[in-house]
Length: 290
Image (cartoon, rainbow, N blue to C red; front, side, top):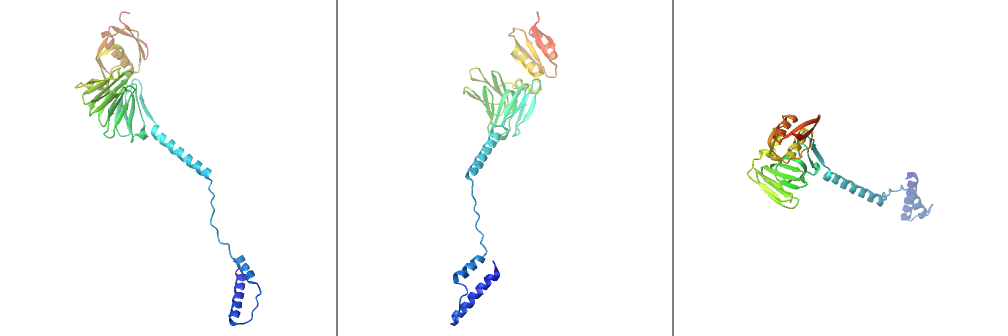
């Protein structure tokens, strides 16, 4: 504001007002309109409110991008999968997010969603594993042939090719086949799913033969000879080529502390067979009279 000019105009108005109320004569140097125009011209402009123009297309784009990011992050948490595998000739112990323990036999694998574990305790298994589950919400182990559910217990699952069997050590275990059959087993019991999807339950069994692999001991009772050689391949990480037509059954045991040739020396003679070493880790099994 121009203070001197404004002060002059106000002083003049005041003098004229006094003259008017005293009854004296006065004369305006400026018209009233000119005076107020001059006052308004000298006033400082008052600040105006800020006007914000929103770009609604940009707002929609930001909102859509935020939703995509949230959905992507949620999908990552839901579907991110951790897989643990054991190669031939090795065993492995793994700890799940809730401190449940898993011991994997040779050539076995488990997979699960670690970031979704608090919502769903679910494991996919291929091969053989011993589980010691912490108490809590439902714990599920899925395989191609069957599904096993527990709340807190210890059990062994063998799930290879067409064979699926569950041995309960402690607690209670529910076994369900893909065909919809179910069975509940208690300690010292075993459930096995047959080719029709039905479940056969054995009770009051000796469980050690089912979990002896944990101690690196392998027991066979009337086991087809081809299954025996397959297990030797698995435990020692070797290749065994069987050029035989032998439907014999083998009963016996061996320890992982022994080397593979010592094992073959036990198994082959009992079945009328012999072995030939083809390379460092490859053997040929043939009939003894050949």
